[in-house]
Length: 108
Image (cartoon, rainbow, N blue to C red; front, top):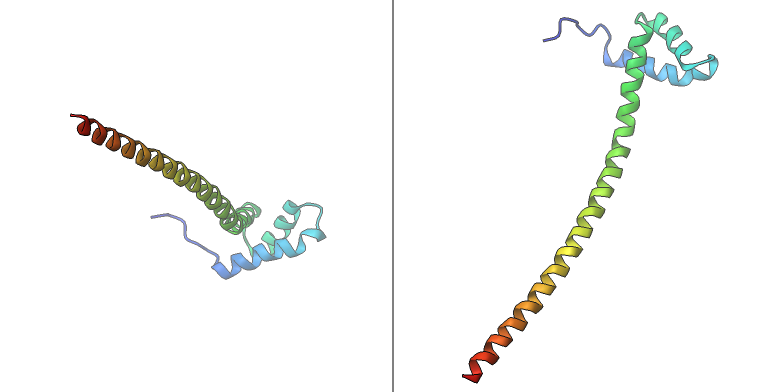
């Protein structure tokens, strides 16, 4: 178990991250905005930076996952197509050899 405890509630974290986004234009850089807002809520700027990055990754994860799903779907569709083609070839070969066997038996 972690020795540190969460000093800030999820609501405070959400609000701080939202404030960084809303007030980013008021400062020269995102880091300046984080430093100012962090001092107002009582955390370090690095902690607020981490919260912002976590929130950003949570927002982009579904989009990334959707792209991964699309790529996987495309790969699976290609594989299904190849397997169907292979099955068709095997069916035709099987019919050919079965007919050849019948022809061979009929000659004796």
